[in-house]
Structures are given as C-alpha cells and as structure tokens.
Image 1 (tube, one colour):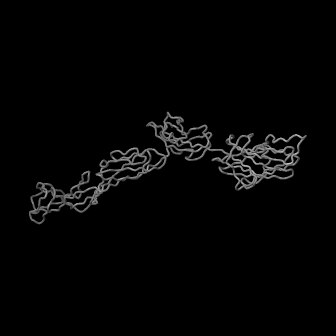
Image 2 (cartoon, helix red, strand yellow):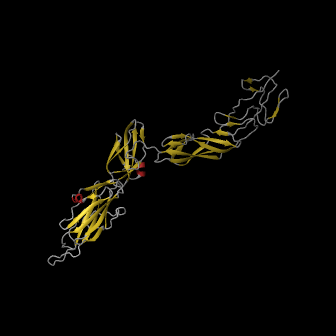
Image 3 (cartoon, rainbow, N blue to C red):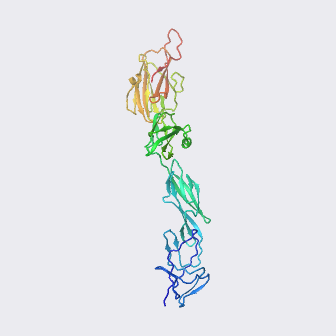
Length: 450
C-alpha cells in the first residue's frame, strides 16, 4: 500500500507583527490513510507531534528533526499578493524588524484633502512585510498637515504656496519618515486682479470664476495677510456677502499690498478660499532742473515738493545777461510703480522781456514744446521709471529793471492730481537798471513757467 504526506500550500499566513516561526519539511510517508486531503495538500492522520520529535515514515526512507510543533511543507521563496516575501524551508526562524519605509501614492496632496499612508517593514532576513495601517503609530513632524488618524490617513490644511510636510511611522522600536508636498490651490479660480500685480487704487473690481452649486460668496480684504487669512464675518476685513462673482472696492491707499480672500458658500457649508494679493499704484512725478545737458544721466532727483509759493529746496540759480543766451535743462521722470500720464502746466515767460524756448529731446522725440507749455497742454505717458529730457534757453531781450526774478516749474500726475513736483529757476540780472533811485526788489512774484 502506498500513501503520501504532501505539502501545505505555498502561502503561509503571517501575524500582524510579521514576526513568525517558520517550519518547513517535505515528507512523503507510508502510513494509515490521511484524514484530510485535496488537490494541493495531504494532512497527516495522526495528532501533531511535539517540539523536538524525530519523525520517520513507515518505510524509513525520510526522517527530519522538528524544532516546534507539527511538520509543515513548503516550496521555494515566493511573493504573496499582500506584498510580503515568504521564505520557506526554514526551521524555527524568528524574525526582527530592522527598518521601516513609509510611502504614499502619490507623495503629494492638494490643500484641504487627504492621502492614505502605508508602512513596510524589512526584517533581518530581508523579508518585507506590508504592515496593517493600524500597526504603526503615526505622527506629524512638521508642515501644513492638520492630522494623521490611527489608520494612517493624512489630512492637509490650507496654505498659500506649495509646502512640504513630514510624517513619521513608529513600529517595534524603529521609525520611518516621509515628506509629503501639500499643493496650493487658488480657490475659487480666475482671481482678478491677478496675484502679485500692481493696479490703480481707485475703483478696483475683484472678480473670480463662479463655482457650481454656490449660493454666494464672502469677501475679505485688508493690508495684513494674517488678518485676512484668519478673518471671519465679524472681522473688520469682512467686505460683505455677494451672490455674483464680483466685488467693487471704491478706493484703497496708494502703494499698499492688499490681500483678499473669497469664501464660497454652498448648501453644505462654507468652502474657505486662499488669500491672494495685489499692490496699489503709486503716482509720483519727479522734476529736476540742471545746468548741464546730459539726457542719459540727468534723471529725477527723488525730491518731491508741491508748495507752489514755498521757498523750495529745489532750484537753480542762473545769471542772465542782456543779449546772452542761458541754457539749462529739465528732466521729468515717473518715480511711481505704475504707468502714468504727466502734465506740465503754466504760462510763458513774459516775451517782451525775454525770449525763451523749450525743446523735447529724446524719449518721445525732438520738438519745440514752448507753445504747449504756455497753454498747459504738454502731457505725455510715462512707464514706471521712464525719463523725458527737455532743453531750455532764455535770453534777456530788453533792459531789466529788477536784479532778480524767480520762475516756478511744475509737473503733476493726471491720474492723481495731488501728486506733483516743483522746481525753480532763480535768475539774477547783473547791471539791472534802477528806477528813480529806488532800491531794486530782491524778487518778484513767482512766474509759473512750467
């Protein structure tokens, strides 16, 4: 009679800790008929042996020393569907975890969303075991994650730029870390003004893409990022509730960073938006008067004055002799952070006493602009930082009866009339004729030249 002791299946079930005792033995046997059989294995009919038992078959062809429990049979090393590597034909093999790898697929997540984490242990015989998600202890080391639950589900918070976060799994005295990248989303999309742009501070309309299912939008804006980020409907940064995706701000201070946020209101609650920002325009015309004509280097002087009749820190003193031509030049520069139209205004120097001419040089092109200045009609558009040079000549035509005169020159921003700059030409006339023995006055009422 011929009987067989077959092998157990190739798959061996590991406990959660993946520290298992492996017993492997292939034993064909001549014994009583088995009590359990299938196409893949034959189970011994007799009761399990005890540790250290020496087992032989009836024919005495195979014997094996067992270390623990019943004999088990297995094949070569194989990978299971769970990701573990099972190594068989080992007797009494006790395993210890030596390293821990933490993974996520992908290793990034959008703000306000979740990502499942996983941990795989490597044992001292290079066996790999994918741990149950509840086996490790999960923690957050840094970054914008709000939580990792006991099942390894990570939740991201809201932020304003892509930011890394580090999570840690601890298991059986070993640790493994993973860096997740939390991705910033501008929500809702289509924000206007576009993030980081410069805009005119008057009549600013905020707009954004409509959100499906939205019943309205809460608008927040202010000069502090932290205040706008944390604002509620009870904060001073709350601008109001609108049902359409647009909001008008009448005016804002010039040269300020304005942060704004849109929260979307739906039937299920409020979806917080991400703050974005823009900068309001600064309008700052800069006028400089100089004696030397150097259009490439003679620019604005970053000194601004708007008191027409004040003494003024910006002036040029020039001696004008009868019949002689005096030359000087002006530079007009846009010192603002935004394109501007700058205007020169005033009246002509009295032509019966003086002959004056003003010529635009370079920039917008050459040309005589004396008449335009006299009519207050000289305007041109300037990009931020752009300069226009103007060459001026003055010649005394007749006998001058006063020793000194002062001409005041002025430019202003068309977009913001409060922004202007003034320079002065203080002219001295050597040999001025006194009238009736009267001492000549030190100056006359300023004549607005430009």
